[in-house]
Image (cartoon, rainbow, N blue to C red; front, side, top):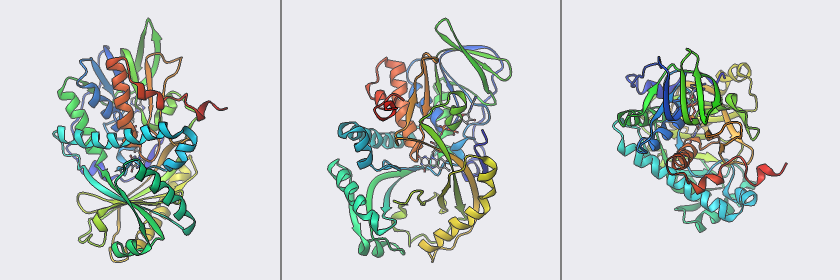
Length: 406
Ligand SMILES: Cc1cc2nc3c(=O)[nH]c(=O)nc-3n(C[C@H](O)[C@H](O)[C@H](O)COP(=O)(O)OP(=O)(O)OC[C@H]3O[C@@H](n4cnc5c(N)ncnc54)[C@H](O)[C@@H]3O)c2cc1C
């Protein structure tokens, strides 16, 4: 799959990232992770202490997939409001989902302190603003639901917003306990940590076939090697859809810009994560070295040529949007990219378990909080493999209420 194009900021922050060999022999293991992006790394993190023989194969280099275009805002609120999710799944289901999301952000923070590579993790507050007057009421209802569920947040009116930011909105939820990270460094940090605990990692090793034989999955690689595994976790990101199509997932195209480092960000209250109720929405964050990341302007196309032909225009438009918000912060685009971006029909990420893939898990952490979803799902999958029991996994399997309706 032609996942993305353009220039990528995160890999430039870690030019001396660890390298791993290509697989050049046939091997067996308990668990094979296919995919060396952040999802594969999060699985490796959880499996590293499980006394299992674990291997990872990555067809190119670690972190070279969507992980390198990920803007890595770590939030519990997503594209579908919790109040909408409650309509689909019910109160108890979504209350548990919220709890697991908050825990997943906490777990990324804990993981970032246990590794020896700096992941640039920072706690951040979020301003989730109403893009138009009609959205104020639904934002208020969402706020009330979150408040009832012990989230630390406030509902701000126009005056409060204008007092803190150089732009105006009718209303916003100001929430605490979100975060940001450098996803490329996080991925390397988790793999480095797992490798030190004995997990074997292979780059430039592409799976090009698989079959089930005598209770084991036999995965073959493009260079003619084979791996015999008791369990396989397909953590191949959006390319997982090329291995096993999942009808509840689909793609759009999205665009991001990373600017030059900015000298003065004092106009940006608390360097909050910024997003809004419009769909598609504009979102913004800052980086460790004072750059601004601006993303959005999604386009419905899933043809790479179509996606890429709009890149320069979208880059200019993203800068223009930023200038409207922060007229006194002067930026220019230093890195910009176009990428496919996956979502699910009902707004929850998926773990695919299919009859024709016994003992396999497809980690489809699709959606705007993909990194948070991956952390959550990796933990649940690792728990089921290591302990044989992971009750919360049922919330995310492809057979769940809405998906069974047709
Ligand atoms: C532009 C953009 C912005 C985003 N912003 C956010 C955000 O702000 N917050 C957030 O939480 N999430 C965000 N996401 C989502 C997030 O990027 C993804 O959830 C996350 O990067 C997925 O990581 P992954 O490891 O699943 O996929 P990838 O990083 O794509 O990793 C999968 C890996 O599998 C490898 N692979 C594929 N096929 C094979 C094979 N056959 N054999 C061996 N290896 C294979 C690939 O080479 C790749 O390295 C964003 C996504 C995009 C595109």
